[in-house]
Amino acid sequence: MKIILTECDTGNFMTFPMLPEEIKVECATRFQSYDIMNIGEVMQPLGEELTRISWSCKIPGEKRQMKKQNGNYQNPYIIVSHGDPLKVQSWFSYLRNKGIKCRLLITETPVNHDVYLESYTMTYAGGFGDYDCDISFVHAKDLKVLTEGAEKKDNDGTAKAVTPQEQQRAEKKADTSYTVKKGDCLWDIAQSKLGAGSRYTEIATLNNISNPNKISVGQVLLLPT
Figure 1 (cartoon, rainbow, N blue to C red):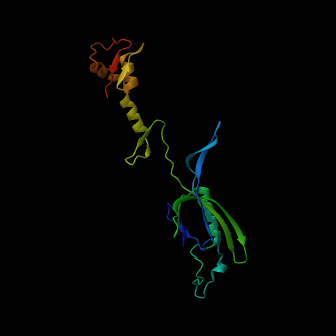
Figure 2 (cartoon, one colour):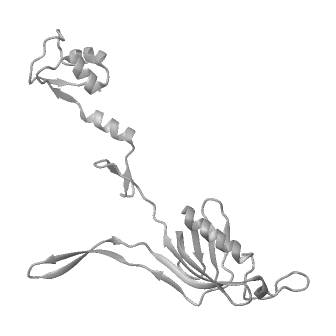
Figure 3 (cartoon, one colour):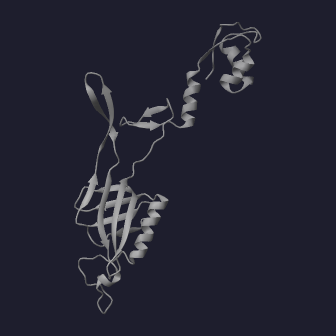
């Protein structure tokens, strides 16, 4: 088993040098509670909580890494690519404070997710320069902001946000007619519905109006596209 944490944007990564005794994965469903007369409490599922992955491990100091005289490390139970434990702590602080999205891969398990570093605790232990570490990650779920009433479906049936331009085009397409109100004139109608008062002649032509100054309250006018 290997635990590899990689920054999604830069590709910087770290292989955790010593494996933990256990890895905890928390998955839960979010529920809404209702208190109904003659029935009591009823729970209804409302989506899922974010998955959290946590463990306790040791970041070994240089003295525990057991160098040979030629400079090569000989301890087969420790991966030493992490370098100075203090640099590891600094990297963890950077990931947490900046909200850096990472990829967490734990081989021989189903864990291979985009995550954020939620929290960590470092304890300086022993005479080897070790850091005892409790660390927790939370699943990084993408957020799609949908405009109210502006939602469409992809080919796979999932909801997709509608851009302001698409929404504007849809609104213009919906205005195919207009009912004349008191005080209206063709210029004002063209300005408000078509975006240009000079297009009043198009409305007049489309509705066979010979005199643009003569329109009646309640008259339904077709609007050009």
